[in-house]
Amino acid sequence: MIFLSLMLAISLQSASSTPQEADLIIKGGTIVTMDADRRIIENGMIVIRKENIIALGKADDLKNSFTAKETIDATGQVIIPGLINTHTHVPMTLFRGLADDLDLDEWLQQHIFPAEAKHVNEEFVRVGTRLGIAEMIKGGITTYCDMYYYEDAIAEETAKAGMRAVLAQSIIDFPAPGYSNTEQAFDLTEQFIDKWKNHSLITPSIGPHAPYTVSTANLRKAKALSDRTQAPVVIHISETAKEVADITIQYGKTPVDYLADINFLNNRTILAHAVHTNESEIGKIKQHRCGVAHCPESNMKLASGIAPIPQMLAQGVPVGLGTDGAASNNDLNLWDEMDMVAKLHKVHTGNPKAVPATEAFAMATINGAKALHLDKITGSLEQGKKADITIVHLNGIHQQPIYNIYSSLVYTTKASDVRTVLINGKIVMRDRQLITLNEENIINDALMFQKRIRNR
Image 1 (cartoon, one colour):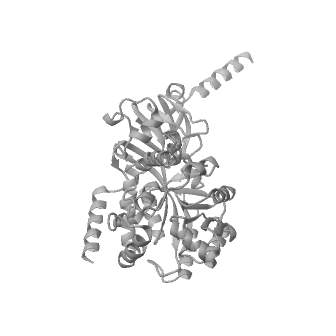
Image 2: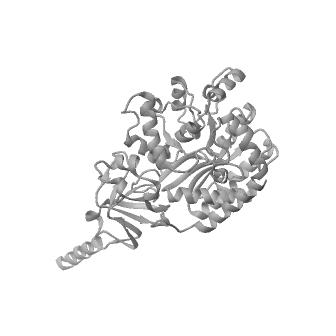
Image 3: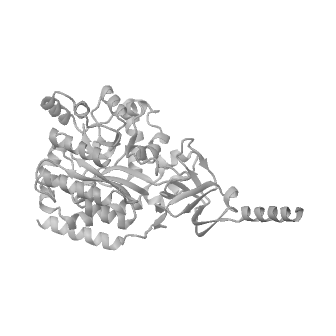
């Protein structure tokens, strides 16, 4: 009996010391987790099985507990959550630089809407999407939120590239690319949601463009569709002072108050811009648990204004960073947005403590995930979350010396410092080389469209 007990104890000890099998291990480097405790782990290790993070911590503590088919050595680098671009129009990369230095109304009405009517078709959308996704992955972005036309084609290209996205089929009250009336737009949207609703990477959503381009009846219809399908809703709101004035004249309320009054706002709503909002409106955004996508560079370039971000953050509104489309920015670089959001609100408020580097980085990661209502699966590096991971070079001359990791990430790191990117546990870029996309073909296709647009 004693002999059997001893053999059982030896057997259990042997079983407990056997390393668990994983698919991928990232070891070395500094892990910036962005978890609730904001843990920073020196000489860290992340263990991935399929699409999930199954363990992370000090490499010395974990190295004997796991074995993997593949290992990435991140020594001398920083391992961060994949960045999250909370607002863009990804195919509009093909309109990059087409119409610059204009206010929003002139830019949109006299240049972008006519250009879209002439040039946007499914081929345009696919080529522009591949171009935009390649740019975002090379800049360490693993999730983006889009609103455009032919969104089904965007979803297909996004899934092929292995990228995570919240994709909104655009709805507008006049003929647009892909449909001739809003009834068709709603039909397309419902089909789109039904097709992609259970996809591991794609979150289909509804995209009524804005209160000034979509009627009250159609906004209510969009909300009803969201209630029925549980799909998120993406909408532009209070982007310019003119929009606020026009909506106030038309409905007797500011845009946020108007949307609240028609019961449009809820915890599936994603508000793009929200530049001209007051304390009361911010309170309603918080009350209804909406997310906000802040696009500082686009708002500056179009002279739309400066959103009250410090006030939103003070009230606990989840605010993420967005690039907007490359036609109004003119890139999809979230590192620039991080640097800009910190500096813009310092000078605007006269307070150098406004939006510190830690907050700016949170807006690009975990708070961006909260704004898109995806924080349960991404935005931070934690056990059980999806392995959406960006590995960044820290040895650039422009980064030396490093005293504070958040300061280095926000104020000195560039998109070109991103080395390797994983999305949903899969490597999509390794050592600056795209894995799921052909960069040369993408550039050639973009140049082909440049010639077409110039010729027309």
